[in-house]
Length: 587
Image (cartoon, rainbow, N blue to C red; front, side, top):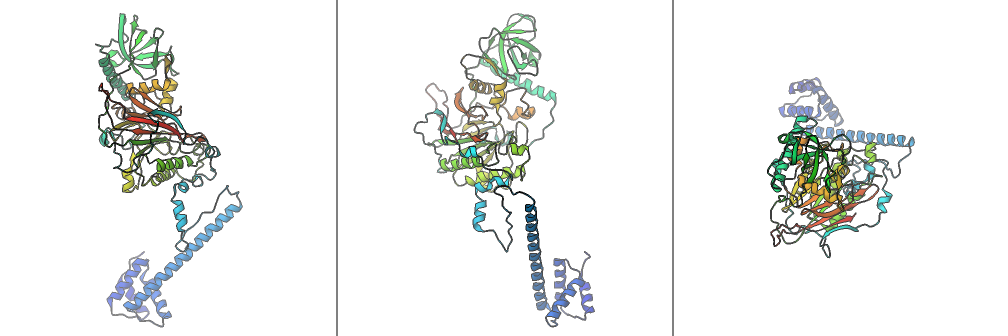
């Protein structure tokens, strides 16, 4: 549009023999031209038409103001007419499409709201509720509620217990005191709190990480067992030698008693030597495990192991920090998926929100997946919204549904969260537009992480390490518990994922794993959700919890709850577990 000036407006008015001595009138008309994107000729023609209908009205500031009001009213009425025509056209188009299709069960027309036809307060209130926010019709046009989940039995039944649970009141402090204090153990500077670049790592860097792991853990084990030095692994010796190395497999298949290799670090030669386990009465090995063995290696080509150094009471480091308050702290733990496998109905998530509202835990740890990549409808792209939008709606429902009950929320991502980074270690979720009160109540942590809750150390990972290690571990031990063996390996290896190589589902970034995937201290509570059976048990002084998953296929699953009490020491100076009681409960 060409620029307009007061001179142009004066020239156009003179053509119609309209005169005015007040320059403010021309400035006002120029302002109207700029606001309404009009040329000088257009504004003059508009004025002439207005003046004629009013009986030849004189041009001055007062009449110009009346003219401006009439132009605005005409423009608004034209917009309203256009909008009504648009809505009518859309409704006609929807009716035409409906006549050529079979409507889905329970489908309904989209309600259009305008200033003339506003949304009712009752409808607006219903839409804000978690139930309707998580309505399946908004995610998938063909989703129906799960019959098996709604007809499940044993709701609220306790299926596993730990500690003194008799007569225990399973209620949080309910905001009676100041909210629970949460912080990552390493602090914000040393913790994985932001996204990072991945999909590029050199084999040399991976090798350096594995070598450093052998050296650091080997030095701690050497000090614990009072071993003077380790012998080179591939050096022939006629005497019994003590060697350090990492267990690996001689092929790409599953590890077995005949395929065990021991790989030494650079200081012990850096070679791989087959291991004969026939003389060992008991052992438990997995690929990636750092071990000390004693045996004969007369040729330098095979180690006949006679002793595997078993760690039963290695002094693991604890985080010592006193707890405040006399009343026990209640921590609830739930792990996704939060929908049954036969539909995208978030009924299990709504149920766990209702449990939070009823029991008022001080802290609720919710682990992914929130939007499960293994869900059939997600795999087949049968959705009407983006993955990110569904996730934001889920989290929004959790935050809104638990507001005002004094509960701190901890959100942990999963490798199965389809909208999030598919890498391990996994950065925390990113939530935008959280108000200040909600941001203070929600803690976003990476997978894995070491979290301090009122001074109690929680180790948390959403990756199914129990399932992965259970498929790779070999053992020869009478009457031993597989879960306890795997958890003991994790604590002794000081790692949230000690398996090497990892399973195909885990994309490992080893440089970040070296910084963020290790256990800096022995946790008081270790949370390891798994597809395997739920449990709560004490392993080397650490309370290990598998809360199960909130849904198991089409039926309901389980969640966990813990009571944390002030730390105390026994007579012999040993530190007692701050976890006084725990339960796994059916949803």
